[in-house]
Image (cartoon, rainbow, N blue to C red; front, top):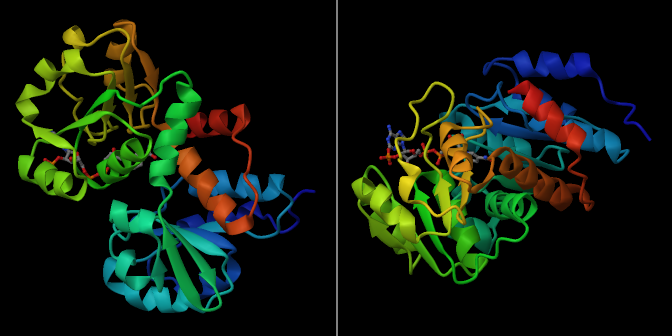
Length: 300
Ligand code: NAP
């Protein structure tokens, strides 16, 4: 059954509303949404509205632009709204740890909330980014078993936390964490015992001993410089993945593929974290189809 309430014109109008618009009106018009600032660029509505229609569920998933200073008041509005839930992106993920009424152990360990369920006037926060990262690896490289392997993780920002959590939960043998600002990597390693910090400048030399290379920095993203890394020392057996998904094929992935390595793009992490959120809200795991991936790739 196709969602009779789906209205592309309304969707477009919501995507262009600016931050002065009434959060309450949107919270009462939508079934679910992504909150952030800025947020108009988000591809989450494209994913969730497709799934709502495919699953025959009424309602709309939209975007709500919320300035950081307005987040506490916005949470009060969302708490009392008829929404099923909402996703959060930059810069709200960390603040929601304190603003939700309950936060589960996964979100606490990752230090950020990206998915909130609204029930009986309360906000329940969790985090599906680690699931998204690991499921993307499982789907993109099914034969890769993290158990006992060594991973080199580049970057120590918000996304790195979910990656470390996901890899450790999957039984990775060793994680080497490198960040331009070493102190941030050290702070992160304190939250994830067993993670070893090394110098950013040593990244090339360390490559030969790793079976998994993960870029969680924003380097390589459209508008950013490329990640400078000579993959000469990497084993062709190593798996290389990039969280950056715009462009889909980053220069890191291109170089890794030329070296014979298997590669996994970052787009799947976006899709699978959304899949988990949808399942939490609506009790059904939606399909990640080739058509959905193609639509998203075409939108980049
Ligand atoms: P963030 O918290 O701002 O962290 C940015 C990271 O990039 C930091 O480690 C930073 O190092 C590093 N960095 C930035 N410029 C650098 C440079 N010139 N040289 C070396 N390192 C540099 O961002 P985030 O939220 O973790 O996101 C990181 C990337 O992951 C973004 O491209 C984002 O789009 C992507 N991402 C993708 C998904 C997905 O679903 N695929 C999910 C989340 C994030 P310093 O600490 O030294 O500044």
